[in-house]
Amino acid sequence: MVGTGKYRDNETMARAIEASGAEVVTVAVRRVDLDRSKETGILHHLDPNRYVLLANTAGCFTADDAVRYARLAREAGFNEFVKLEVIGDQETLLPDVQGLLDAARTLVKDGFKVLAYTNEDLVTALRLEDAGCAAVMPLASPIGSGLGLLNPYGVRTIKHRLTVPVVVDAGVGTASDACVTMEQGVDGILMNTALAAARDPVGMAHAMRLAVEAGRTAYLAGRMPKREVAVPSSPLEGMLD
Amino acid sequence: MNDSIDVMVNGEPRTVARGATLLELLRALELDPRAVVVEHNRAIVRRPKLGDVTVAAGDAIELVHFVGGG
Image (cartoon, rainbow over all chains, first blue to last red; front, side, top):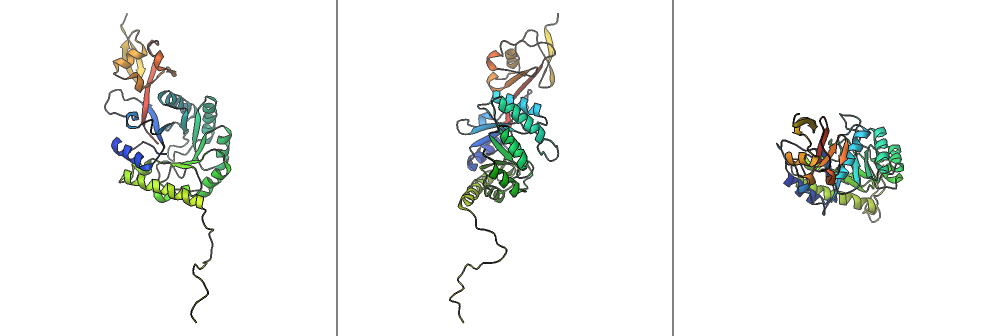
């Protein structure tokens, strides 16, 4: 999954999305610019037959706002899916867990398929699953930070305990971050800034595609156990006197 | 009686013709009704109904669409 924000131009965005191999593409809901000083609409750059478009509630700080945005998005869009964000802190953009759960319950009741952006707290993730969310999206690190996967244990535990898909959203900065994230066994990653803010977004998108595939394949292959002591790889027998 | 009324569109004051429908408002703003979602006093108005809803003085209208986001 990839986002569509912050690209320097729409052509670069379209090429980066293609290179990423993403199947799901996120968009945001905002006011139309009435004086036409800039063209902000994005739909004509994205083929809805090719990508599943996933509207978000980014920028919402209350459950009520998030529900309002989700309903507008459903009206504008093509499906019942919404990436639910209820932000609790301006500086870190970390989620407001109480507002998130309230909004998730309301939207599920309203027929939405909710993908909930949350932190890496297991209990919150379990509550979101109980609330009927279609997927839970723990962060790797704060949105747009590029700090990578700060709490592999937390994300791994959520994946281990939940039945619904777990997609890591936010914080992945480069290919190694994506690889390590996928090695935790999660079902996918949503990234935006890592591509949009790279010097070469298309090149980074390609690297991310390989990294996600590598991480997933390594997870399925099962890594060797870590040891605190060396174990020789070459035979001890047959050494010269 | 004045022929125009004051409403708020996307948070900004606008003057529209008295008795105008939401569809006529979109036309006046040169917006394609298929490309925007209309919220009228906090209630979403579906596309087929845009021609049935008349705008009243003081109404709050939001016109939204999809933009780039993560």
